[in-house]
Image (cartoon, rainbow, N blue to C red; front, side):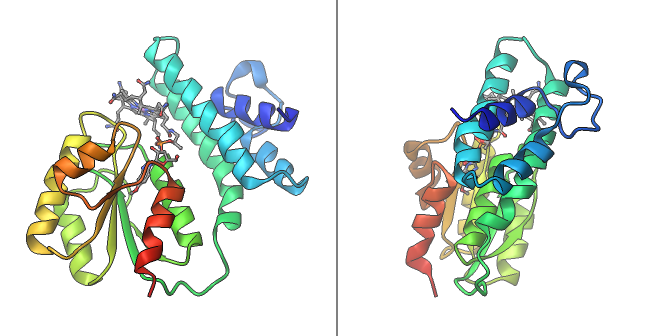
Length: 222
Ligand code: B1M
């Protein structure tokens, strides 16, 4: 693999946000995810390669080490911060200059869940697909989703969950939305989900990744 991608992946894995960041001590003075992502793009590496070969695998390694009790929540947080610093540079590549006319996409991470990196990636790529995005953030309850749908009739809704405990909240949210806004299309995603779960909770579509969400949304293009 390209050595620049390896370095970028390591910066995220070890939570090195930028060159000035004192954390982690062993990388003091080294370039962080911020500079490494910017340089890699300036030097012509592909944004999708940064994502699929460096950033996402780095977060997987972080998750693996967390499962094995080799790192703890603060280290996961630093890795997330480094990932976000790199994503800032990717954003312009995933946003098209087109007027956003295809419709409105309301997205949020469901109540109880604070993970937002995957949700942000989906938002970024759907926006790049020509949709206006309303990002409700994390820990979003059914009331907020319902109110936002009322204000944006016809919008498509995306729900994200990363925890096996919060994916069950997703079912509750889907039920409540469908009761008040039965015609609303809801797509769901997040690492612990699958197609069966999507069907079980009455959502319309399970997207395993942002590309899946973008492809699915094409049928609704105005
Ligand atoms: Co958390 N965490 N975390 N965490 N965390 C996981 C998810 C975990 C798998 C780690 C592990 O144990 N291996 C585990 C969940 C276990 C489980 O439920 N089975 C876990 C845990 C346990 C926890 C806490 C409970 C830890 C604790 O406090 N003891 C706690 C819960 C807090 C809460 O939410 N209430 C917690 C906290 C955190 C941090 C805050 C420290 C941080 C999040 C920071 C942030 O997001 N701003 C964090 C992190 C970073 C992770 C890992 C390491 C990385 C997540 C990530 O960003 N991945 C994660 C382990 C892992 O994923 N390997 C882990 C990269 C991202 C690009 O992928 O989010 O999967 P992902 O998104 C993908 C797809 O899922 C999909 O597309 C994305 C791109 O491909 N997708 C969608 C996502 N949403 C979609 C929506 C769609 C379509 C596709 O349509 C709408």
